Structures are given as structure tokens and as C-alpha cells.
Image (cartoon, rainbow, N blue to C red; front, side, top):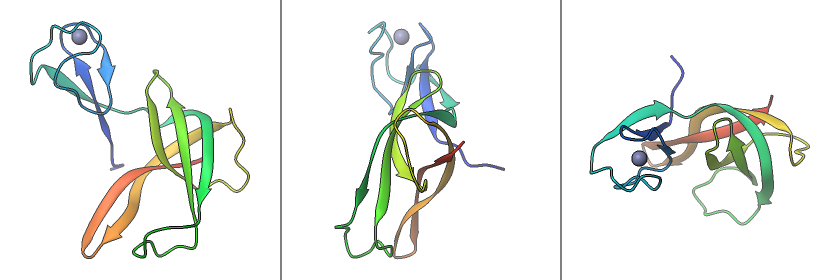
Length: 115
Ligand SMILES: [Zn+2]
């Protein structure tokens, strides 16, 4: 079963937030815990990207591609990318994968690929 990252849908007005918020930024009337978790879409378009070469020592890779992606449905997220020649505006798809290991802990995030 594929892993998911969840956004939070306001039960009063339907606005979707990511990351989580205590109060709906659309209607402002939602109280704590009145959000429904909904999986983030896994397709979108590449807004911008960069490559990091100065990484903390626990990243066991020589460089890391970072992307900011406009997901279908209007939410913008940051993630890693594994695309050889990225282009702004290109269609991308996401997988939820381990993006960092910290001792025995594994941290998951979105990794983008060419669609
Ligand atoms: Zn709302």
C-alpha cells in the first residue's frame, strides 16, 4: 500500500490546508479538530528547483535536488526531486519515500519524478 502525506480539510467550508492549522484560514470559524485528513495529490507541476551541495554530514549523498511543486488541487509543497534535467512547469509525480535517516529513525517526505 503506498504511503500518504495528509492535508487537512475544513469540515465547515471544505478548504484544504497543508500543513495542519489550528484555525481555518478561509472561514476562520473552525475550532480545533474539525478537520478531515485527506491524502495530498501526487501529481502536479514544478514551480522551481535547486540543488544542494553543502549538506549536513548525516546525508549520505553528494548532492540533493529540492523542488517546490504546485500539486493538483492548489496546495504547494516542498520536496526532494530525482529528475535529471528538471524544467520549470514540467509535469511531475510524487512518491512518499525515506528522505533522511537519523540513526534508526527514518523520515518520510515527498520525492518528485518526471511524470
Ligand atoms: Zn473553513
